[in-house]
Image: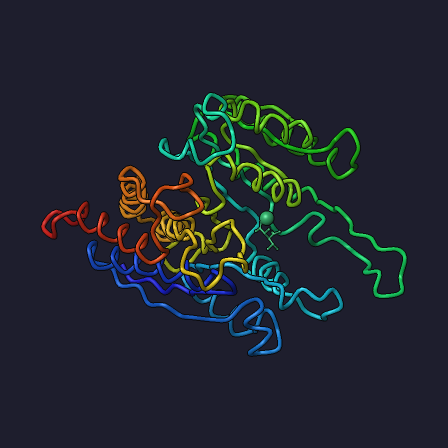
Length: 371
Ligand code: IPM
Ligand code: MG
């Protein structure tokens, strides 16, 4: 297969982790006989510095023309001035909106050997295998707002949802649940928020079409508690933009480290292979405190590349090969500092990437067996 992939390094550890993800994609291309062409573009703080905007128009155009987009991370203290007219985060919100990526899939698996890396007790973590589907282009992130400015004493954001916005993301989550353990929890704050009451009403209607799904509606505050008390009870969780943002940082702790969690943002528009044109990114941020030290965990970026292979290119076998290569290096005890016990040996970002590549090569099918 031939595919064009836009790579958006972004800021902080973004370029470091994407370098490793690209090495893994190159290895997939070599061993499975594909051709991936990369198109590097700017987004976030580096784009503000070099181009005067967090989302240059050519970045959006390239992403719209590509088969998929892989993103590192954006942001950093350099661009944190609240009075600045543009912010790195605007770039990421802008590209999600421009590409119509309304559903953000955040799978949470706990590798058995990383149980100790989690702050939670091993018995709480038993059976954790979640897929959080976060609505990504609506809600309070995009509703009408008023900035207070320097002198102002009042500011507001608006959590606004429309029926079609709720319908499509709930349907996508329900379809995903049908292919998994057939359980879906829809998250809202219907006891207080009008937008949540609409969410619950529309979700209830949509989910009536899925008689085989076990459905529950859970208030977001209760879900925050359940996630660290009995996370193994949940399968697919669907939530609005802000609730999904918050709950997925919490859920990342179930996987041991933010450095382990990939994400896929999908919409309706297909690429030239007939698959959704997605944006794939680790859920961790740009981690300016460790940027440039070569110690960032590249596995979330590598696993995001695996999701890209699966959803945007339809390369399931290749996606699984990458996921297995990651599992294998973890089985072998290879650790970046974020997932290591204190006092144990750790590897650099680059060595972690090299070892995943090695494991992938060793597991790849012989050329004659290639599909
Ligand atoms: C995420 C991040 C972003 C968000 C930031 C960087 C704008 O926290 O992807 O979860 O809030 O959506
Ligand atoms: Mg977040």
